[in-house]
Image 1: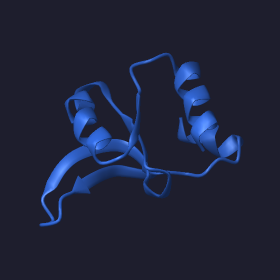
Image 2: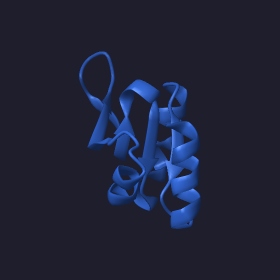
Image 3: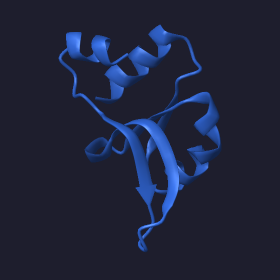
Length: 78
């Protein structure tokens, strides 16, 4: 996924992103994140964190979808 994003000259995300609360405690994790865009990519085992990201004004994309669908969704948002 990162290689494809780079080929398309799209912004490269932070990896293994941890969303923290105002006390610094980790409240959600994402595989990839574009903090300035409030966009995260979640793996299947991170979907429980989706609601927390959404509550914090993030758009979420789940990587369990077809690769091409994920790439298209990201292109539309980046």
